[in-house]
Image 1 (spheres, rainbow, N blue to C red):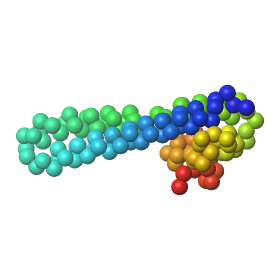
Image 2: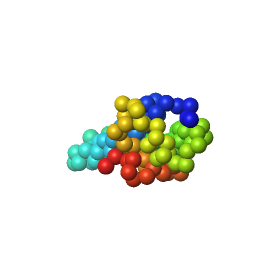
Image 3: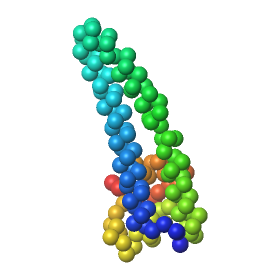
Image 4: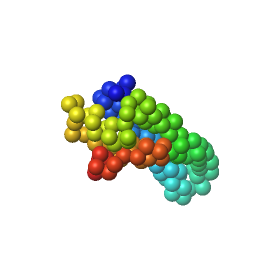
Length: 130
């Protein structure tokens, strides 16, 4: 049996998944702000603003726009549940551990399943949100 309770695992992956979605959204908005500056079509505001807005976007994109930034945390959680029990897959762990919890009808979020797959821990499609 795993040392982590299913409900704790559930909370962790949903918070992590939501946090990654916020970061992805922030990158999109940052890029949109650069586009808005360019669309000003007024020389001095563009000259005064574009460089700094572009630099901010580039910094965010180069530091956060990568799955690899998140893989350490994903790997450690998935390795924990696999190492602490006799599970053949994270899908089997998910399916069996949620029985009898308030989350028995829940599915793995798509974003988390994609990160998990990138870390080498694939979920079966029948446990992933549609």
